Structures are given as C-alpha cells and as structure tokens.
Length: 115
Length: 214
Image (cartoon, rainbow over all chains, first blue to last red; front, side, top):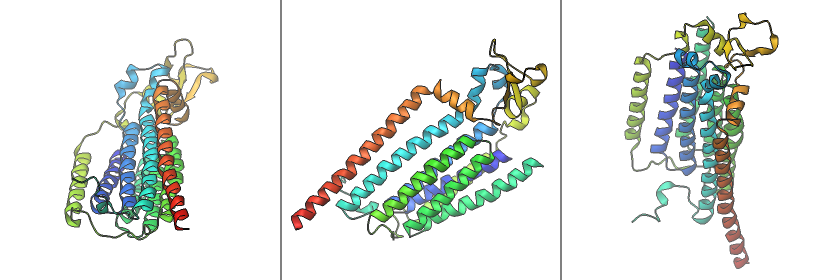
C-alpha cells in the first residue's frame, strides 16, 4: 500500500512535468518541468529500493559485502541527482547568455537552426 | 497501525507536493514558480525521510532546494523580461497536452494499482527481517551474517540496513561504485567549466559594447 502511494505521487509528478514541458514557452519553466520529471524518476527508484525487495535475493547473498547491494537504488538516485544538478547549471548559463544576446526567453523565438 | 499512520502522512504530503507542482506549471510569475518548485522538492525530501532513505533526503534538500531552486530564482533576477512569462502555449494546444498528460497519469495509476507487487510485507524469513529492519550479526571470519540471538559479542552487532543506511551507502560508493563516482565528478566539473565559459563570453561582449557606446 505504501509503495502504491509513493508510486502514484511519482507518476503524478511525472505527468505534471510532461504537461509543463508541452504547454509552456518560457525556458526557465520548461527547465523546472524537467526537474520535476527527474524528481519523479528518483522517487520511483527509491520507493522500489525500499519496498520491493525479494526474499531470495537476500537469502542467496548472506555475506557482509553482498548484503549492501540491497541499497544500490540509493546510489542510482544520487547519480541521477548529481547529473541533473550539473545539467541545470549549464542550462541556466545558456539562459543567461540568451537573455544577454537575444533578449528573449521564449522557446518559439529561437529558430536560428531551422531549415 | 504504524503503517496506516505512515500511509495517511504520505498521502497528505503527496497532496501538498502535487498542488505545488501544479502551481509551478500554470504560474505566469517565474519567481513564484521557483518558490513553489522549492516547496515541491521539500515534499519529495519529506517522502524520502519517511521511507527510510535519509541520505537521499539530505542530498535532495542540499542539492535541489539549496542549489537548483536558488539558481532558478537568481537567473530570474538576472535576466530582464523573465519575471513575467507569457502564458501562451507552443504548437501543441492546452487541451491536447492536458489530455496527453492525464492519459499518462491514468495509465500509470491503473498499472500501479493492478500490479501485485512483491513487497517487504511478503518476506517470511525472520533472518531477512532482522537484517533489513532490526539488527544483525556479522561474523568477522568469513563475513557471513547470522541472527542476533546466536551471539553474545556486542561488537559484532550491526544495525539493520534500513535503520542505518549511511554506512552501507558510503561503503558501496567507495568500493564498488568508485569509478562511477569519479565519473560523476568529472561530469560536474565539465558542466561548471562549460557554464563559466558561456557566461564569461557574454559578460566580456557586454563590456565591449558599453565601451563602444561610451
């Protein structure tokens, strides 16, 4: 039941993020929607790490080194968060440069590479 | 009883998080959207703390609430005309994207509720329960793991994996996933250098432009 609640929260965040990504034209709000999607993915990974554990996996790996792999999902979450943070910093630098050069923050105004 | 209290708490937190995330995508003021995004991140961090992932919760608050949201707010302040975003939409219309996203949510919810997940409640073995949620004993000779009842040596008793997850995560990060950790560091350094290069060029060009006008 708890797994269901967390996964539904995660899918709600995912669909809200997709909605924002599809509708909004502002670059920064598009980035925020992207962050919401990253968050929902990490949330789902952590929920599965905590609640969806198979008994045989632990019984087959009862040594101190192997038992830690139950928590591998947390490592995946940390990696996703770090890559997302770096990507956001780069994207916001691009937004700053765009604001200086073209003085626009609308995605539909950026059509230099079309055709 | 404990579990149902946790469920009610998680439902309340999720409602707050979903509402603040909705405010982010419909808000026309970008600064307010950044603040609501921070609130949404905090609710996700609260969910992490509630489901025994304390390290992830701390990382979430430090990185997302502390860095990403503040960065968003700063970029709003630095770029003019950014504060009030137009509410106009892209090529896809409002109702089409509403339909697509609610279809995705409905399908996910149906799949989640109709799947019979293998959860921790199905675990029958008392040893596995002790290893995960209570305390277990690590035998130093062959690294094997056994129940707490078999030992009298206090030094060999370890906390369960989800009771104290910091030490296992640190061990994994510094042994098996060490190369991956270094690669993540390399990626972040590349991102920092790239963003400095992009913004530095902008500022230099800006200064030259000012000199020409003077």
